[in-house]
Amino acid sequence: MTLEIWIVFGILAATIVLFVSDRLRLDITALLALMALALTGILTPAEAAAGFGDTTVLLIAALFVVSDALLQTGIAEAMGRWLGRIAGTSEGRILVTMMLVVAPVSAFVSSTGTVAIMLPVVVSVANRAGISPSRLLLPLAYTALIGGMLTAIGTPPNIIASEARAGAGRDAFGFFSFTPIGVVVLGAAIAFLMTIGRRLLPSRVEPARTPVTTDQLSFEDLAAAYHVRGALARLRVRPDSPLIGRTIAESHLSDDYGMTVLAVHTWPPGTATPGTARPVNAATRFETGDLLDVQIMTEQGAQLADTLGLDRVPPDNGSLAGQDLVYLEVALTPRSRFIGQTIVEADVRNRFGVNVLGMQRLGRVFDGDFAGEPLRFGDTLLVAGPAATLAPVVREQRYYGDFVVVAAPTELEAQAGTPLSPRWPLAVAILVAMLAAMVTNVLPTMIAAMLAALALALTGCVRLNTVYTRMSWESLVLIAAMLPMATALQKTGGAALIATALVDSVGAFGPLALLAGIFLLTSVLSQFISNTATAVLVMPIALQASVGLGVAPEPLLMTAAIAASTAFATPVASPVNTLVLAPGGYRFADYARVGVPLQVLALIVCLAVTPLLFPF
Image (cartoon, rainbow, N blue to C red; front, side, top):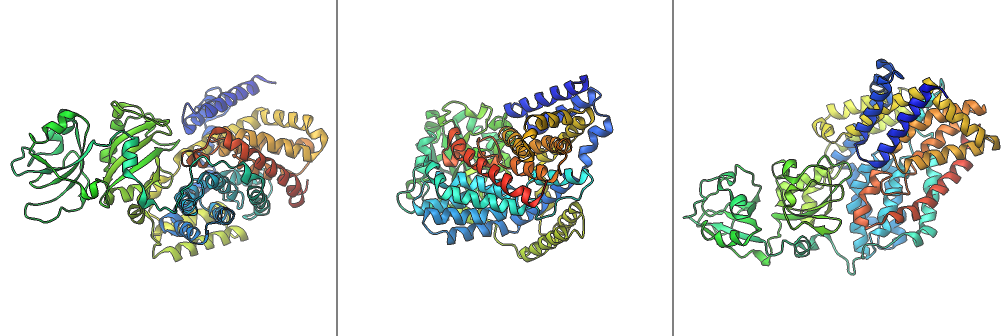
């Protein structure tokens, strides 16, 4: 091997190690690899920057807009509610119905968005039927990944495979080129999960013993779990209170008295009942008669309530939890922008209008100053705020968010839900037109997607400021920065070397053995690094292997794309696997026990079906 190949392999190995260790963000790791290739002279500046203008990146960005339109117009959520109505109470019927609904949605909406939409629906359906949510959430994640196999735009690996084929001087894959294989994989997965797989699925979370709905969520249980029972009180500002006219910041209630104001109800003297809870911030001023929902963390705070001119008011029904003041338990997602920040640094109160009452890590409560503890993935927080404030937070964070709402009262879900927009028929029409253009090849796929995104924005079906907020910039930068790695592998001969090794080791046994080798290489890598990065790395190897064995590249590219979406065996293989980890109460081994047989089934399907559709 030449020195240049050793340098590329060294950078690639270091990149994979950083991907697996998750010590840095994926996009930062990819950019470091890109800079290393440029600084070592392997790539010219133009070659290093080429990924950011690649049609693959532009296509995926446009598809984010299209996907978000389905969310903003309420189309995707309406499908989720429909599932809840028709699923019934039979576990088998729920499982099959869920998979048949989720897979088509995931063919057009990102798998992460699909699972975020369907997760609360599936948990609710499981509770109604008295089934452990653990029996359904792992199949939900797997189905979302399989759904990405159904169309050319279903997942980034499909797009990368199509672009790789076009880059080899052949026609790009058609919109439904992936569909037959994806359908067979989906059918095999349904058959497996309805038979052998059902015996492998765990029941980690206790099933509901009686039909329940989310409005039966016990605040008292949450308060006890986070050690805040007894720390919450309702106080009214007396006419002689020294707080009147002062802001929360000026009052120093938290620093001096250990008292945190969660919400304020305006209640002028002479008025029979207080108003609804309104959010507070440092500039909120106290007025005579205001009813305060507070958290008192010290005995001094309780003793000084009278000194501050505050009278205790018994809460309605003996609990502060009500329709206008809501308590939620939320968990940080693996890509939350707040990981590594403290609650104070994240400015949760001013950013979201909520207060953090307690924090748990791995089931253990922080009894001390948790506000100064850097947050980690999986930390759960007990937050409180007015329903009017929390509803848009829940709605905003439900898709591609910083945290997952574990459970929410029914009245909040009703406000947080996305009703069908009057523009939904227009969004459907634009989507159908885009798909028609892609299927008929009237327009290049990227141009069709860009036109659809522009049409959705111009017609008001999607709000671009929201799209820019929820856009997965990390994914886009990851793809753009990793594409030049494929250039480096090809330029130095590294891809040809790996392909030759594959051809020499397994290719001697025939093209089917090479197909199996490509599948296994891709599938193993996808368990530890993103399927996008895996696809970028493997596609040039698949192309070189096809040249080395003298076969058509299509079956190898198609197999690599399918294998990249079989991220079933670990909870870190895909964000959707991680999303269901906490709600399902899963252990690491649960994913391997169910996921590895599914990977084997996908391998068998690829070996049996791919050569029939794309001969060698």
